[in-house]
Image 1 (tube, one colour):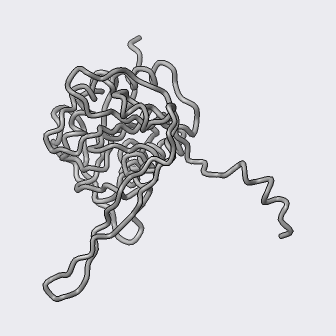
Image 2 (tube, one colour):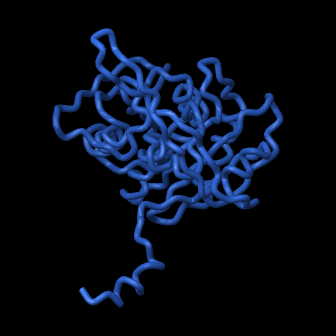
Length: 256
């Protein structure tokens, strides 16, 4: 009997027309039966948002040759939920998100629609991975990133993953063929120093662009930012349980 091929659900936050998701679905085509459900427009920075104030719409289309694919009017997490419960009518064997245009290192994971899709998969008990390439350019080269995808997906399908854990994979921007390897590491302690660019519209009313600098708060050699800077792919196991266990005993001493 021929072994059953894994069912792989693919999504992203850059939209179904993005070069990154085209590269991702192509990279994993030989690993299983691929179904794509992705936003119909860019949804970067949406985090774990879901759509509750308006209807969600799905449109099946010939977005990728030989692949069942749908565009969705909602967020990346909406795409995962609809993919599982309205399109597949079952949990897939693997959820992949990306390949994002731009890194999702350190605390960026909290804002990332790419990683929120993977976290949603982990919440459902499904092995899930988010992939990001540290290149915002429209002409970004995804060839090396596709090889990284194949390596990680092969590892997940062979070894499995802990329930409730997904992988945050970040790929540095380096010349073709010059990736130095893959490092398993932790999330860096880094934050945005936010500021706003205030401007005036033609009616003399103010509007704002969020900007700022992303600053590493530590100098350690075991974080995603450290290894990305050295030309390595970083892989951070990520979980949705945000309980601060170290604070539980202190809180229990309060006289509440």
